[in-house]
Image (cartoon, rainbow, N blue to C red; front, top):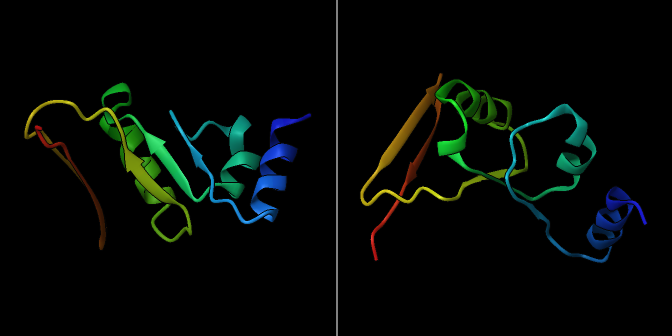
Length: 92
């Protein structure tokens, strides 16, 4: 079964979807339209790529979640007009 169809079936059944290692690639647009959460890894992307992702999703229903921000106390802040995204790691 096609991944997009499987995800669509899950959404229709009431599930919320989270897609990992998101980098905004064009070949995944159909999946993006179904996602509730997009997990990005800021350390694997340039500041420009993260800024573009934040700006692309500033008004979207999809939430961006930073994952693998693993430096203790590290804070990454990108600003785009009136919108900004702050990713902060915590030490446990």
